[in-house]
Image (cartoon, rainbow, N blue to C red; front, side, top):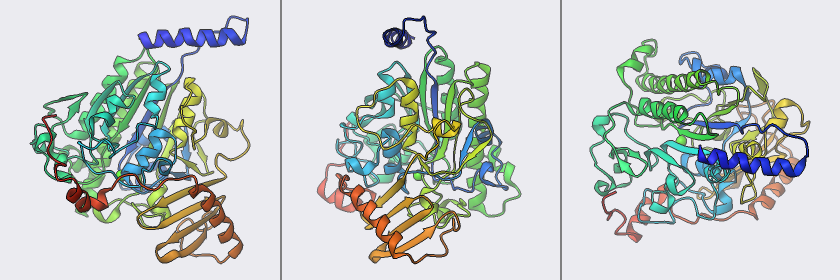
Length: 467
Ligand code: CA
């Protein structure tokens, strides 16, 4: 509340400078980002899914806009989240790899030179909370409470077990390998707690609670579910909804998506009940495409999945609602990217981002006020694989292993089945990529793929005090 009063005073001052008329100060919009983990493009009702009903996620599409060409900035979790939370291509600051769980290492995560969306909004009076998966650094300096969030409920690494009986480690002092951190008790701010609920349900419960506690203040809720990322674990309550699915992986995956959907429903109901629904921006997206072989997800009609530069890796289910200011029930077909969330929120919060953003405010494009397109071109780069992709208009150029180039027209061929021959387009897209690459940095830390190399260089990696 105190932050909000400060904000009102600031706004009054700014508006007072602009006009002599008395101006009613409008409350800035609340912002909720619902980020799922490894959910396939085809696994939401609004993209045509039929075997997994997502009636609540679909409400966001009905109340707002579906992005039919919605992208993330990388095909796996960590770099994608680094892009989203900074509004900048993560290669600008050397985050081109999935970070390791290395809580003694201040360089395994988001550089402190980067401002998070939470910091930018916190400075203008927002109450901020991160819930769920963090994965932007486990060192003390990198944790959510030091990166702009007032509150945190969740876990620090790239995934977690879902059942409370699996949380056998009191804290990270018991972690002795990259994936052992999946077994720690959850964190509530800086304290380990004894949570009793199925993880996804607990995250949803905390999201509702945060909204209830902050109705008087503009707020930013970053709700980063780890579902439906592996391990595939679901409760009977959700599994019994999917007796029509025989494939065991797909069935458990479906149950996990359904638990997220219930949580989204509870959250949207709470916004309506508190009468703050109209002026709350709610984004929904997945952090990357579905790894269909491991979690049973479905990216149809897109080619390949998580990790790939084909559409299945980076083209995700993506929708937004803001009943007060954007159209309802619309499909927007121009390419947009997760980097746009920061710029959109900052524009209406009155925030002044510290760094230059790569994203743009999407709202004028959705209302039709702005006639152009949000992005002339988009870029993706996989440093270790020496692969990259560029999209301009409908044309996409991929440079895959061994410098094999493939050109597609995505308007005609969204499944990337029919490579085109056009030396002119290849040259144009390659030139654009080279200009962009000149502004980027190589990775500044070793990642998940270099786990052994990192361990050899850091023998005290898991020598950690109680925390
Ligand atoms: Ca992911």
